[in-house]
Picture 1 (cartoon, rainbow, N blue to C red):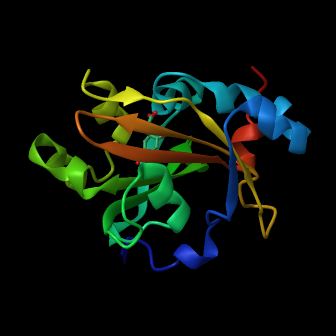
Picture 2 (cartoon, rainbow, N blue to C red):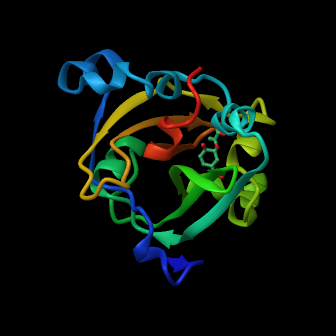
Length: 187
Ligand SMILES: C=C(O[C@@H]1C=C(C(=O)O)C=C[C@H]1O)C(=O)O
């Protein structure tokens, strides 16, 4: 996978994460899901749009790395693809007012890249959400809640994830909330 930033190792990374079917189920293990993160863990519709509304100045997608790579075994299981099969994996920072607020990791299996899906290889700094929500083709499945195991205070502790299903294919979008997002003005 190619990296767009030589200094990526000095920026918060995505920690190992356990996924729960619902916010309530995750809340039994981690009551913090009911704190300031709760709103973000439950946002329906485009997460990009919700973040843009929170910005006072600017919103940007920064590609951290993207390319063909093998998903984790757990991701492959969730997507029902063979775990050694390559997928297009895209990791970005979603930045509000110049600060990273969310890390996102999207696993896009080969099936999704056929036909008009080839556009997914060339998103660059354009948000994936704009593509997914502009087409009636893609339907979002239920949101899962993730409890992360951060190794440093700048890493995410909580996350959300869902499958987007197209005609015969599905992709998996995970969004990891950085502490800076949870420090933004109360709702
Ligand atoms: C799925 C969405 O797209 C957002 C944009 C992403 C990207 O550009 O890679 C990744 C995750 C999202 O939060 C959304 O807006 O809901």
